[in-house]
Amino acid sequence: MSVMYVLISISIFVAIIFLILFVKSVKNGQFDDGYTPSIRMLFEDEVKKQSKTNKNNNSN
Image (cartoon, rainbow, N blue to C red; front, side, top):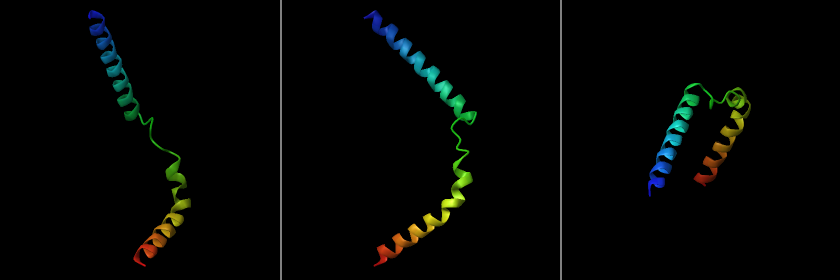
């Protein structure tokens, strides 16, 4: 039974370490998308056309 306490303690410690590393990487901009905003203008017209088509089809 004492092994369970050790394993739970270790797993909580590892989970806290991963949480700290995740928060640190988010604050440093690791998950920021630098590519999509630069090409969004290329596909903006297609999105507008599709939304107009969907609105027209729904109203009929």
